[in-house]
Length: 390
Image 1 (cartoon, rainbow, N blue to C red):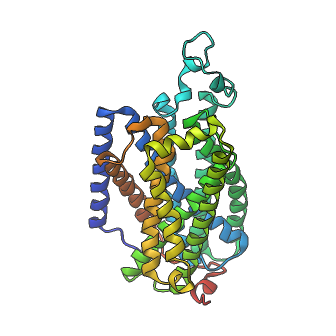
Image 2 (cartoon, helix red, strand yellow):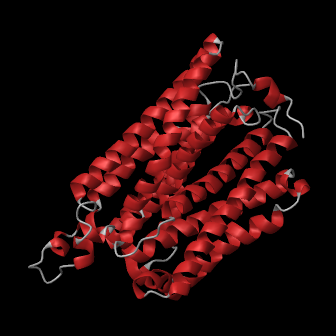
Image 3 (cartoon, rainbow, N blue to C red):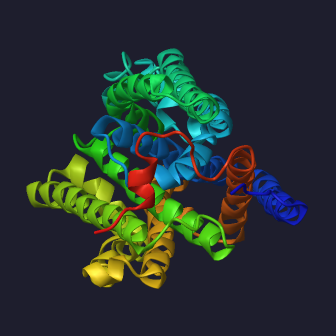
């Protein structure tokens, strides 16, 4: 069955993008720090879904799994946002300057300046704008190339059949997984952790990776249930929903474990330059800081604990919505304290900007869905996925 991106749906995405544009203009008029921070948070939020969609597809190929074949068109559609979000990210990191990245102020590196910062100056080999931009371009370029190849081979397999394009997709998956395993860490160091350039965590990259995974699984579940509710994807059953919910549940627990490990080790050691990172957030962003734990850990743990709950679409839908809210809160508290100090808060500008990026993401996703059959054809494990039963 094919998906039709109706004129009404297009208009809805245009309206959302219009709201976002108004919100961003208002933000720049009132506070450029707030504007750039919101652009970074929201674009990274949807880039996370797109990138982990590629991770999910790659793992399916490398593990020769069949259960995820029926949702492959959805993950492919999500991944297409890289072509839009990637360039936006380059604009953000290239033009935001010290509105977001305090270390980009050249006076911090000048020993003769009154603003000289010995700690940041000591990181000049890595934290300098030319190298920073080169890394960013490499990230976006290689990710985009892998997304392009994966989509290309998938469509060619539909048209021509056989296993040649399946094997080519496996090759792309190997390269992407290896490259992404490194760059998900370095990109998160660059784009997020360097906002607080005095502070660092050795598990930050893995924390971000798992957060991307939970967010992506929640988005997949929402779109699957939306399409199924419209009478499409009739082969999706409670077994598929259960497997996706297992992913969301398991990765929520891993995210919680990594968060707690990072928090407790830093808090227990009580080293001033490390504990200040959390102390500032607890004092100035306590509702968001502790609220995200309720959304990202407590809700999934209690609402998806049993097998029956995971296979129940209503439970999966509820938890997916809560997880999306929770991981927005997580990104918010990672970015805002370092860019807006104690002035950061969720207001109309934040909501409007997020809605704008949501509209853009939905436009890219739905346009991609409309270009090919919702169910892949000629995939070696298609029948296994159609007849999935636990």
